[in-house]
Image 1: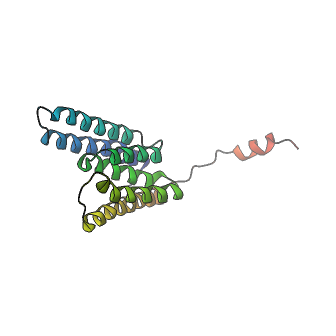
Image 2: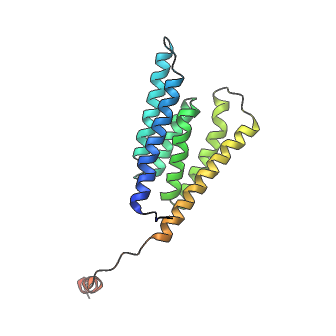
Image 3: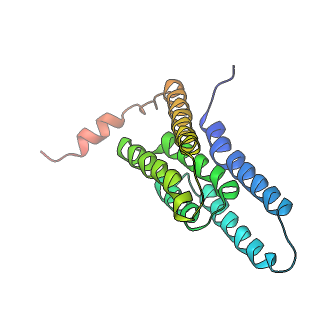
Length: 174
């Protein structure tokens, strides 16, 4: 088994996540396209997908902000097949890069949103479907935690340059 490096993490969190979300969303939109009045609906689907892909592309800098943007789109539109995968990938990214409070808050808000969203849009949701959504959120956080542990186990401490401590103590007055 190979080592997971910072470059590998970047590839997973940026490249692969963005490509997977964009391709699955584009395929779903193309398969469900309806000519005529459906063109406006398809435009909004593409806009929702574009926002999710942009948020995933920028999620390394602000993981909580990317999750919040994707959650807003997930809650606003009833497109689970377009917005569900980016939502879970942003949650994995938050679990890898975020602090403890951000991870807990992001997980709780995401689980609540996944359960509440179908009811807000008038869909008939079963308890099993709600539990499956919460389980997917839990698995996403678990996968992110595992990636975080793998990175922490392979992290090599940065060497201190010789004389760096001497320079800091010499620069202090007194």
